[in-house]
Image 1 (tube, rainbow, N blue to C red):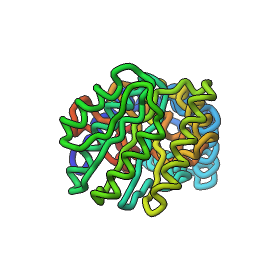
Image 2: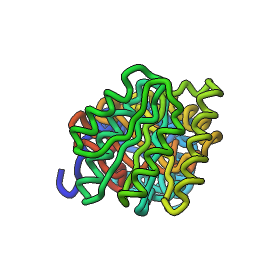
Image 3: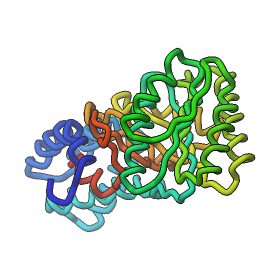
Length: 298
């Protein structure tokens, strides 16, 4: 892996699918119009959206024609630059302590697992962490989260099933302020983004954080299952409209060849990928790195 790490490895399936197709079109004698048409199809097949794939190829074609470029290595290097430009439409995700991370998302995306991994990540950086079990909607949700809290060796604040999630957030904030905890991670109920009452609940919890803990840096992260590819974009759109998403946690990236959708997501929505789940172990989470991502898909 050289200088690269877990993110690079997690992109293996995407890389395998993309690299072989690129190898075949670069093996032709001539880089001409047919080459660019095929390149666009390849990018779309890697789950880069049609709009972003067209943008990348159009920019690349115009530049290479203007430069009369025929060297295949040079064209590939410029393709990487075009993709980097798409990723750069979203700023790098950065956080400051004290921090509150509210993790949202639909059912089944790996949200609870991601919270456990995030807790472990921050403790490995020397930060104190508390988890708030504010998913009081799903049966046994707090019990499952408690298992992850024990594995990560962090505190958890929870309440009875069916209680008001915002009250759990209030209690957690009271606790972390008293103990001067560095990081509070809030679990929320897995939401079908069509359920307006649950979306309103998210807004209420956000207001509690902003009112009761204004000195903290508040980040709203959406967990997305990478295996759903472009279908995840609609989830981001709806949640972002409701509570202004600050960043994305990508889960299950190691299990998909659809990693290209990240390019379109960051290009078209300008929301950064903050963290990436890179496997099934507790410490299999990493900060998203644009350079490592590009090298990982080619």
